[in-house]
Image 1 (cartoon, rainbow, N blue to C red):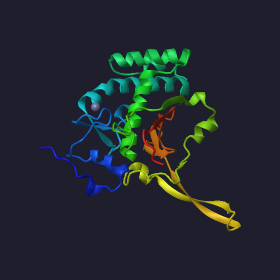
Image 2 (cartoon, rainbow, N blue to C red):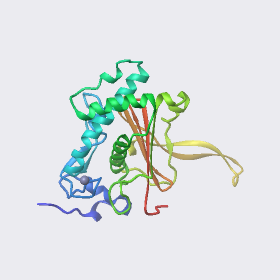
Image 3 (cartoon, rainbow, N blue to C red):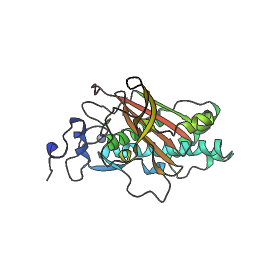
Image 4 (cartoon, protein in one colour):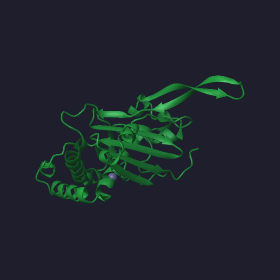
Length: 263
Ligand SMILES: [Zn+2]
């Protein structure tokens, strides 16, 4: 029997209501398409992690169709990243041989990585995987961005780059915490919520004519696997920002704009 979920019982804020979709055994909706979800999907997908996998990986509901549809693309993306990282970071001349498995998408990933080295290009398949992972993170962390009336899981922008293309200082600067003063907080108990902290910065008060401490709310990165996968999710300026660093090598930013104005 399917159980409908009682919204009022758990959340007061309309903004937080969608979180009910994550309750086990309750009626769940696919975060990608909004159809009924029969499965749960790990975020980040295991394709981007090393064995042994971290325990307690976050999961979000997904329908079988969406869940299966992405696994081949994930394999493509992770092999693509791996080949490039080997080539640029480790000067590995055999970088394009390392990808494993007798899969069509692995062969395609190797070919694409080779082409990328000759002439960098924006890979739509890669971007689609980033979009999908970003939807997962946003859904899990802040209950936003997934398929619903306000959000369609369609980003306003997807961009990515790799470490060798950036000045080192800039790359290191990516890992700073983000200031999210006066914005809705991440979901209670989510990873992002545990990465929230408040710091005091010194400022000058014109009214009081003296130096004051101003509290600032910061959201830090969530590290899933040390040096291998980390991400940051926050809501700011009426947009959802999802930032991901794969293998300490590829940086990706996905920005979702809402149809509603939350400010
Ligand atoms: Zn679906």
